[in-house]
Length: 63
Image (cartoon, rainbow, N blue to C red; front, top):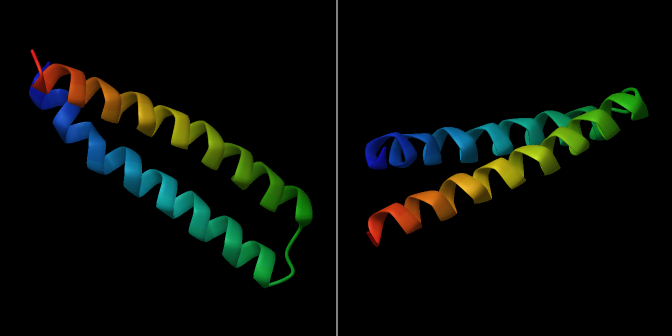
């Protein structure tokens, strides 16, 4: 379980970064505002998941 959490940390953080970049690119290019809003909502959800994964990895390393 420990190695699974450690391996998920980079994927979770990269997923947040990718969605953030897509949202910003769409916003700066003048794309559909609804798409930017959806991407930013997904970013918040992915940030929550990333924090949970990171906290789980920290907890697992202390055991």
